[in-house]
Image 1: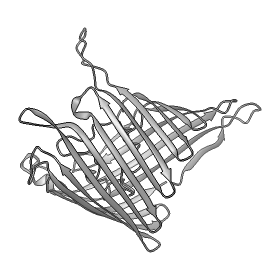
Image 2 (image 1 turned 135 degrees about the horizontal axis):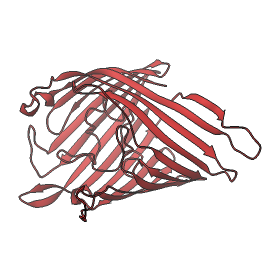
Image 3 (image 1 turned 30 degrees about the horizontal axis):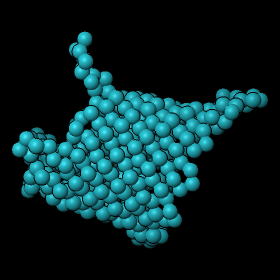
Length: 334
């Protein structure tokens, strides 16, 4: 991503002091989104075809101590429109970090060990399908009726306000994260908020990377085990991911696991075009059929590089709930 450097050697070049840097980068995306799920009775006042757009600015500030320790912070401003709703703009919660050698510690709006796993997302500009991810059906931690229940760096809110440590040496990398939300708003109560501990380890050998992750939460439906393996085969790439989402659904009053597996591949079509496709199988005991929660999801994404950080993106998804989403538009970075 091309970055605009607002201060290459800001905050002084005095002897004994390292230079501080402030960078601003980001991206914009806009296009059309057709979502068949908007035709359901619950959303009968929402058009099935809408404009989807986002403009994001990321602010990074770093400095370095005399001992070579990097100290920094990150914040974002994001402006977004989806599903015909009025556009919104918001700053997120800040993330702070301290780094030395292969160790980095983040505090605040953390990334999260599950969300930061290699091979977890697709190799597209939206890390999903189309312009805005189209529901991120490929994610093995995202199952119908129970999704996005892990820590991630939040661009449009306060985030989880946790702490995490990342370490890498040679082909090995590890990530441990912890977060806790405050409890209820009623004074003098002992209600606890959501508490999550997650970890992943990854190893790169040649053109392949394998990763194993686990999340433990005081919310029973959020425990999960994730495995990914991804390989770069030159013009082609392949990725396999498996998720065991523990007690994710309840059937007949009994909590049950939901297993999901995703196979994805990408291919370079000439110098400027890339095709990414995935198929996911979700073994969900809670039901089948239209609007149900068991079955197969698949999607395909086409990207054409127009140069200058601009690309045309188009994609289509059929979810495990048998709803179709089609998107197309432009994506640019700066």
